[in-house]
Image 1: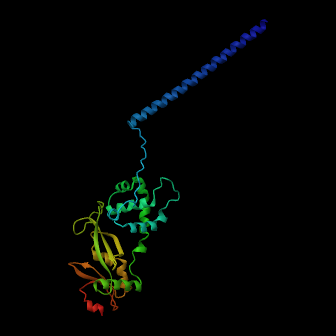
Image 2: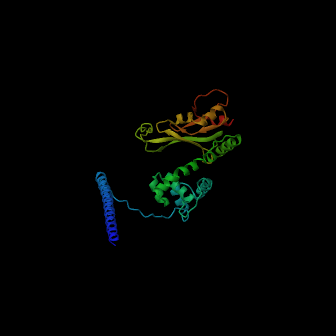
Length: 301
């Protein structure tokens, strides 16, 4: 019994020492963790002090405004807002809709009609993207995302609608149409330039200052007997003269090469003189358009 009692006492003592050692290790581990957490807190406080006070960003609630459509608008209001009538807008919408229809349709997908109306309103009013987006009932980032796509789709239709008479049949139809209106023969179109105002950058400000001391781009346009644009050049600044634009456009090359036959272009030029631009039907070489008064009887013969 004595030996058994002694064995139990020794075992109890060894177990107590192991428990005390284990408790000491746990206390040391907890102290180390507390020190690490305290060090991290001090480091975060130091960074916040260096960066200064930061305002917490509040999440804004999304607001879905009613989208703009043509329903309920009178023809006069449509033309005043978009510079196009209802029929022209619908035709333009049918032409560009295959290129702008999204692959994934959701309840919040912006309709193609809303995209087109937003871009047309911005172009017609000369306003900024914020104003166009507000009128269309969409956000400015969304408007900025689809604006290049809509413009590219519209520009892609240019060859189908703006085409100078390049065949003998079309040239004869245009000449006949102008002659029935004015009695002036062999006319393929009326040409003129106009200045469209803009705000240029400071580096190129002197190039866009025109003769009226305003900033603009000089735009050349040719119209036929129906009032349709058959040629359009809009890439030269306001300092460039009208004659320079014509000398460097493709239509001038067509007249010089004889593709337009005995066709003429008429328009205003310096003190309302008749400005005739024509190819040389007699085969002589001409290097520049000539300014002259034209006798109708001579041209008719």
